[in-house]
Image (cartoon, rainbow, N blue to C red):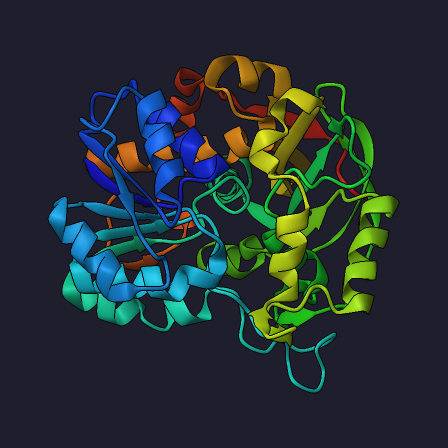
Length: 407
């Protein structure tokens, strides 16, 4: 497979490192606005033979199409902030390649009732164009990171193999990561973190459809495995809630993230000061988006590995009925920062995100995953994906939990 990787930040670099020993990866073009950065990663991976470096502006659709055709790319992999999703998605359609991203096109809150009704939902732009992709005989795989991505694979596996009826698919993410030397240092893109955490969270319920709540609503304490322990999680806007109901029969879908009171207070302060705004304002003759300023002031998450310790857990908690009895199962993947740094030189959150699209690429290259149109991870058989996880050094776990009391 020949891949045009757009974005050589922390996740992009980790993806390239994970792909390097895979014989099926014929070429991965490392394309970034910062050419020096792309060249640096290319050099680390052994040079420009399989990993050539290119300069690209992710907002320039025509340039992306030209670069894809220059390298005869089979797939355009979107590894940049989701503000560029529409451009990259449309460029792949024009170039006639496969497309993959780790976060879907952005939402816009309801103009008058943002905390009860949805406006433009995550991925609406892409799914509205699914028919055109299918008519062209092409496939776009959306939301194929860790969350969304692996969490959706787990949901599909649970539906196929662990339950006869599903009450709730609840993605639960928690960690005990510590970053030394910083009062506030997000372990993932602050741009994306602000988008997810300050937008109204989405919930799906059978008979009601998608609706929203205020940010950080419905707190619950969840017990995470491998020593992470009890973490309070709150509702956050996330793609799984928009994906799972399209494919899987269930009564409810939620996403809850273990942020912590201190982290939430920082996010609320950014909102209060208007620093979450992604629209440009004029400051002393210069136009700049406040959110971009925040991102520039904070440490790059990709560089924090040596200051980090602990583990992060991504997983899907599913409740329902099996063989006439209540059942609750947590399917999860835990990434230890020390192990990730040792194996691929990337911190845990970055590494945990990066291995999923690479596994998906291998399945697409082998023809094990096939399809047309715009599809989420639930559209594909989960078993081949999960069988490959251990071989990539990222094994999954499944825990039986105490079923919730009947209402």
